[in-house]
Image (cartoon, rainbow, N blue to C red):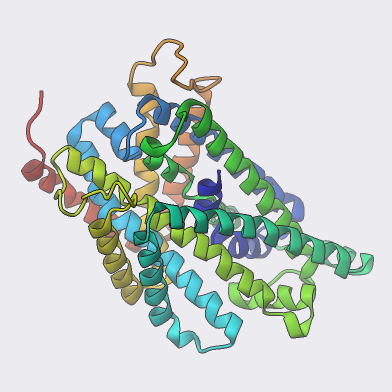
Length: 420
């Protein structure tokens, strides 16, 4: 559950409520968006919980795609994870970490690329210290994130007067348009992204039938509650709808809740949140390459698993290098448009393995998704909606990511051996 919270709750918990306030303008609409996205994500989590108990192996989505669609589809997913999704997510978190660290200490934003690369390298080294060290960091940062929410909501309740609350809630809301809904849906999806990465740890989880559903669904329930409470605190702490940048908005809310002298506390909270997400991503991502190496479609040296430390040093190094390159090449939004659509497509495709593969009879070892096939239907509805919004809103970045993934198709014919 700590892994889910750490993967999901990163920079999105503080950026997306600001986007909600600017686009939706209504507290009820923002809370409804969190509830809808939480429900749809939980539907997908139920499908992944079943697949992770049926195939408790390192690799997650890679394993499910291989079982349902064959080795070439699985290879293309691994290609996408190596070149698009994993470095893209790591780079986005590194940039978010750098932006808020610099805002907290009052340094120039021109230092963002350098600080982001340094943070990615530092957390890569933390991962190489061993799974025990990374797990402790993930648990403590997950606890810190829960504490941050309590502090933030408590400050909003005790610091603001009733008059200020009424002023904030009574502010004129912008008209609710299709564009506003699209921006809010993309922001909400990004804020919930990452829970599926727990499937990559399936081989290292004890009692997966009991553990995986509780961790996935329970973790998402915690995240949904956290986002709702933070949105309320933002709405109480901001005097009307925000029109400035996300970082300026966070600083203003921090000054409102904690006073001018401690106005940078909220930015410091963001730094802690993103730190835990970086640790979780760098720990979980290389597991898919272990599965690929076992199938003979990835260099064994790059996926060599250190059983004593629970680390994959070479793959971690590759991810750090590629993520650092993306930091130098694009902005935060450019990186999101590059990797999120590809990740969403394969996320939905892997989840359909629940429909493609024959379901086993009732077993003490396998979790069965309740109300099947309703959860997978709801989840695919979300996947198609998010993909359509990215294609319309960020066509250039989406096309670039798709082209990189498409190069994996001819590569698969050279790498993957023919199998019956």
